[in-house]
Length: 313
Image (cartoon, rainbow, N blue to C red; front, top):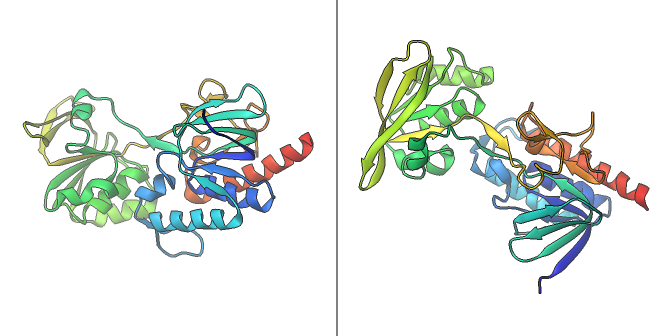
């Protein structure tokens, strides 16, 4: 028989939004329970230098998340290593089921499940995932010391990945389907000044090829978006950095979503289409997607949950 745990406030997710919600929920005496999910700490745990967190000129992403977790725990948040596999928002108290067998019931819920890397959907991409194809430079970059590698994308993620990979690779080819980057100007300047990075404009990935036994990447074929001409680029690694999609699997059929699956919240609020359920961070933020804005929304969500619960009482 599975154990049941009840809480006034259940926080699902453990990035900046989740941990900040825990801190503010604890200060409001809600005794929140935070379920960390499959990637405790969220995307910042696979990031290196964070240079835009106020008061810290530079901090390692994993270190920042360790500090935030400890802050939330010290404030009074009960932090549980579990992954929510089912969430019933049809009636209060809301019910969530964890993969550990634990059932959680809650008077209010804050969704802070974040986002996950997008993929191109190519058969060859799927074939070589984990064997030369990756979406995480900080996870896998050290495997490519002295090798030539390719990065796909043109936003912040792609530029940050390319810059990080120059620590290991002999050459990084950045492939982008346009002739200008969408990344922040300071990142663009760093990339264009880096002698190891070679941008290839107006191209998109057509195919990844490699050896069969053992399985491994040997190169890519890229297509010119205007002429259709195919170019072969030898490489040992391919990093897909085309952005992220909201991790909305628990609520995509129950909450209102838009913009490709982001949870809709009321204007100037974290309230969702179901009273008592709030969304904070990358699951709802399709515009800014920053650690600091996620933390701000976590604060908002906790304060709004406190107000909602006081109204129910």
